Image 1: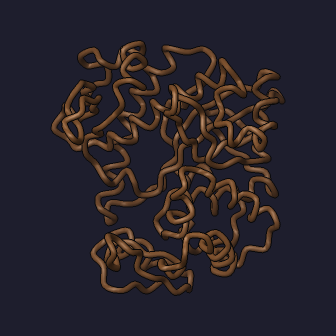
Image 2: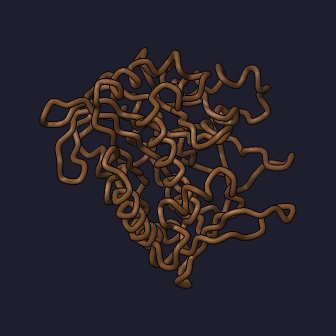
Length: 336
């Protein structure tokens, strides 16, 4: 693929090597064309028209024939109102999750999780579970399937494409929504997770908040840790309260998930990253570093529950999809 001038290594060192042929446009950032982010559509398309424009463009670019795609696309843009904009961006994690996993409905995804075999036959996107009051955890993907014992499984999966390359502290975490839960999990104690520090601080506009920082001198992707904790809290609420823990706007579309929960499905929580090599902004080094602190977090979370299995290791799309049949142009785009 060819791009206008850019210094973003996601484009210079990764997408530029893709065999996919497609025209791209600069995203608009603060009213001006961005040199670091690109999309498949004209970014000036009016919001009311954007949904159909993006859907049709993705079908065209990736030569998508399956009737399943439209329904899964509509799920994927049902999040916080900005997803239809984000999902047209080439390096969007929402786009990666949709393109790489929507076909689970048509083609069974067989994989190993923590050494055990699973077969997934359906997927849901952008599933919200309540953390507290108006705070929701927005889960990228929920895979539905069976384990070897023929038990139903709900696999709640956080998807990351290149976000983990952006290391740094996580600020402005709501004290009201999270402090009690962080304390309950033991995260506010010294060395709760070696290499991380959880503490109160001052956020935007001098508002008190929770912060997650590196305590080792090595930059960490702290926002990923915050998100996984949020998912754990929201998912715990769903396991305990069922339908009442879901976003009221989504309940009618998630009957299958609720029924499986009510019938005792195994609940798994995990995270999947796209594995870059070190040529892409030291991607391999940063992934290994993040995987290390994720592993420590998973141990803490699993020690606090018997109702959810938090996968002990971060997954990569490369290993998760190694035996899964993808659309040819999707495969070319992601170089899988």
